[in-house]
Image (cartoon, rainbow, N blue to C red; front, side, top):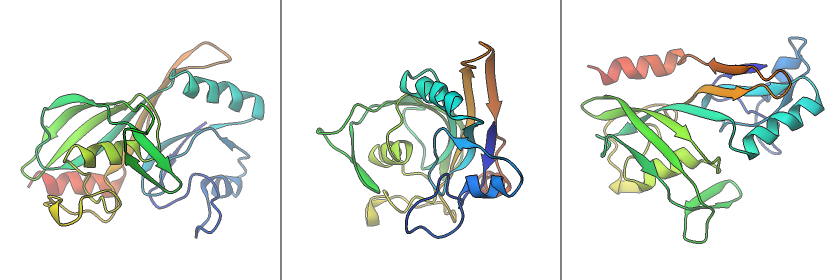
Length: 204
């Protein structure tokens, strides 16, 4: 099952974190599901769940083999240049924080401009690897922090021209071959109301 996670909700229970996580909210609706992957708390969009542990292992195998195609929508500060490209900065993960470092793991993010606005750029982002905060960190390191970014923006030097209450990042599509049936699947989670409002403001 693919669930459209709202921003502000935890994908999985996290020690010390406030608020209930998505599996608990689903359980209240009579759905006993096992999360296969996770999104940042601030990120909305498609989260994949399994109905049993055996299926979860099969789906996790697709992620490990990079056979799960993950497409995100993002809005970055400024006019992203080049309009289409790849960010391949190595990422060193350290608990709840990550940074670009030569000591880090290989990380690859492909992006394409969907629409360029006066103060920001809407991007379609294809995530090849799945490092912690990868899209947010790559965009900020490239000089185009995501709208609403507070964790990785470069302080006073960051070009904050357009504001948002949360990071403008949405897990848009998942495409994969079902490990049991062999069926090719593509699931899309439409942009939620707060990001549609953000797009509306960007256009004016």
